[in-house]
Length: 227
Image 1 (cartoon, rainbow, N blue to C red):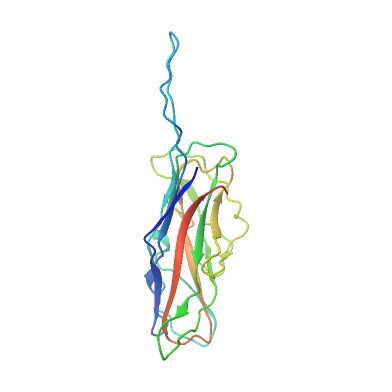
Image 2 (image 1 turned 60 degrees about the vertical axis):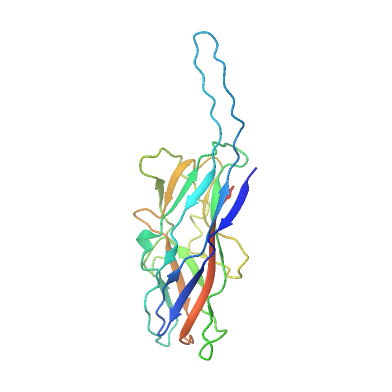
C-alpha cells in the first residue's frame, strides 16, 4: 500500500518590476512505500539467515527558484533559474521491490504564472514553463544527469523521458507533469538527479507583451510509485 502525505505547500512568487524574477518553490509531497511485516527467521543447523523488510520511497528537493532580473526588450525571452547547480533532487527508493510496483517518477503540478499586482497587470500571465538539463538556450534537449548518491549503492534509473526534453509543463494547477522517470526494476537505492555534468534547469518564458508587476505560481513536486 502506498500512503500519500502533502505538506509545506508554498507559492512561487515572481516579482517583476522590470521582470526581476525570484521566488520560493512549492511544497513537497512525500509518497511512502509499503513495509512488510517483520519476521524472525529460524536457521537450520549450520546455517545463518536474515529477514529483510521493505522501506519507503521518499525524496528531497530544493525549496527555492531564483530567476534573474530581466529587462523587457519587446522580444520573447526565456530565462532560467540562476541556482541550477543547487536544484538537485535526491530520490531514495528503499522499498526493495522488483516487478510490478517498482520504478518511480518525479512529477510537478504547476499553476500559470499570473500577475497579482492591482492596477498594472492584474490577470496577465507569463509564457511557457519547461525543464531540461542545460543552461544553454541552444541546447534544449539535454536531460538532467542521474547518479548514485555519494556513499550509496544504487541501480541507476532508466529514464523513459530521455528523448523528450525539454519537458514543457501544462500549467493548469492540476496536471501531473512527469519530469524524470525510473523504469521498472531501476532506480533502487539513493539517486541524485541533476548532479554534474547536467543540472536540473527550470525555464520560464517571458512574452514580448509582458507588463511589469508581480506574477505568482504554485508548484508542487512529488515522488510517485511506477515510471
